[in-house]
Image 1 (cartoon, rainbow, N blue to C red):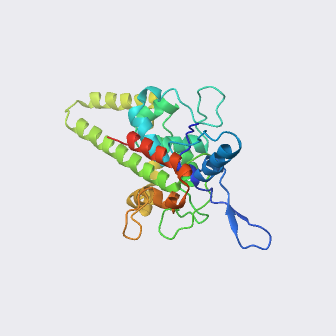
Image 2 (tube, rainbow, N blue to C red):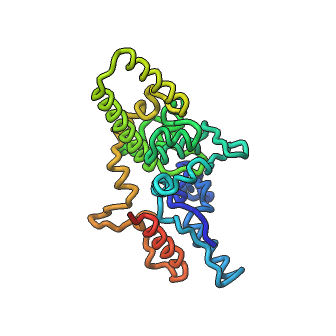
Image 3 (cartoon, one colour):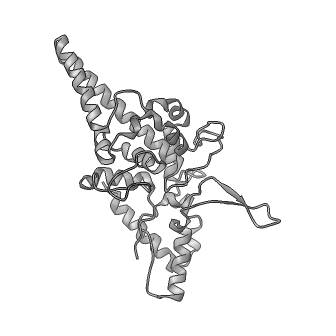
Length: 289
C-alpha cells in the first residue's frame, strides 16, 4: 500500500505539552503524526503481525521535502496545474479559499518555481503579491513572539500553523527563490522597455495595458509580501536554509538526507528498511535531471 506522505510531516507544530505527571519531559504536538515515518513503521509492524504478513505499507515520498515535491510538480506536471486543489477550506469544488495558511503555503512553494502569471492561473490569484496576507506568510516563517524569524541564528521558533504545511526553512528558501525570480523578471522587462524607443503616448498605453493584464491575471504591480519580507529574508539567509534542508554536512561528514530524519537507521530490522529503500529509489528517479 503506497501513500504520499512527505518528509516535512515528521516535524511538530512548535507547541509543547507537559509529559507524564512527575516528569520534566515535554511532548511536541504534531497533528500530522499519522503521516510521519514513526507512524509508518509502527503501522507497518502492526499490519504485518496482525493482518497480513505479506502486506507492506510505505510512502515513496518520505525522503522528499515539500519544496522538492513542489519543484517536481511545477516543472514536470504542468497539465495538472489548473486541476489540483490542496485547500481544506474550499467549497468542495476546485476553488481555493485563497486566505488560509494552506493556500499561502502552496503559493509559497509553487511560486519558487512558477512565474507570477502561472501561479495566478493555478490558484486563482497571485497570493505572493497581496500585502494583506503578510501575517500568514510570517507565521509560516515561524516567527517567535518577538517577531524574529525562526531560521535566524539563535532565534526561538514560534508555533507552526495547524495545517499540513512544511518547515519554516522550506518557506524561507522558497520565498527567497520567488523574490529572486521576480526581480530577474522585472529587470528583463525594464531592459526590454529601455531598448525599444517609443513615443510618450505609446508608453502610456503600454503602461495601462500592463496594469490591465496584471489585474486580469490576478497579479499586482504594487510591492507585495515578498518585498515587504525582504528584511526577514536577508537576515535569515537562504543559503543556511538550503543547507538545513539538505541535512548536512554534520561534523565534517555529509551524512545525506537520512542524517536528520533517520538517525541510526542501520539498527532497524531489515523488513522495516524495505520501505525506506523503496522510497530512496523512487526519490532518485524523481530527482534525476
